[in-house]
Image (cartoon, rainbow, N blue to C red; front, side):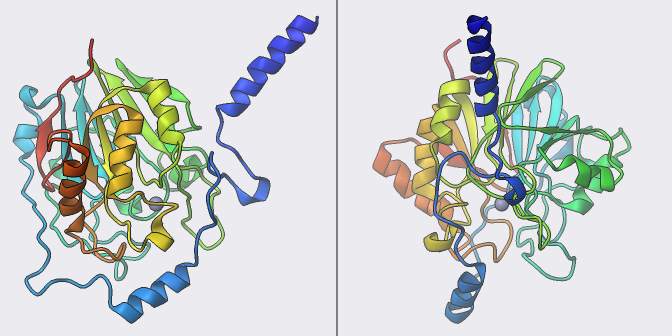
Length: 344
Ligand SMILES: [Zn+2]
């Protein structure tokens, strides 16, 4: 009998450990301790006082191109990834079309007339996309979850994609009239034909309204299929979670990692990695290659110059003896083929 009890406790505690920690009315919390979120108002005051970010006289140097919708559908571009801008990436894998954090609107904002505006034109719009099979959402912040984009995707002529969302966010989708939606806890996985998809922990937070801080979960998505293993981390600060993900699900052929919206560090550090941290995350995940995202798309999200992240990345790569292919950036709108780099 004692043996059964021990087994029950073991299974029960393992199941508990695998879930996102919850703090009653305070909602979800991160796996590893970190300082409290600093004052948003203090940051807003500082950037107003210093006039940040300051566009250079000739404008930002942000590489962009139009996405060719015909090329997207060609067999030669499977597997591939297309950077639509910010954290929005279109993945073609095993014949499936997958969108991460789709935002196709002019602003990353609760309202259409104010808030961070797109400074690089959208390289492709929803009607030009191939049929989208799956949409994955990292968390509910406005630059990752955009109501207009979600509604337009759900109304696509080819039928609504399947929406995979963090725990607690399904109700928001149902409120929009979207029914093909499932919510996931950390380490839970699902299948889409031959693909295996797993929701993984990162250090972040969530908020969409005045009173809903951390009431829905946040995280990254791991996709495995066609011999490839990829991760899109969403928004994240630096934590030991990446060593955990690397140990459990690594190595990866490719990691899509945020490299922008890092300044000022005193405000951003707990929620957004900077470039040196992104280089360390690639190592922790045991990712052969990484592509930097979450930069150069929307104005006013943070204080660093909008074209600084790739220059900073080039410096940090050189310091660590990495090649450009090891950790690169793409043009907004660019499609890049994906290769298997792990040993079979
Ligand atoms: Zn966020």
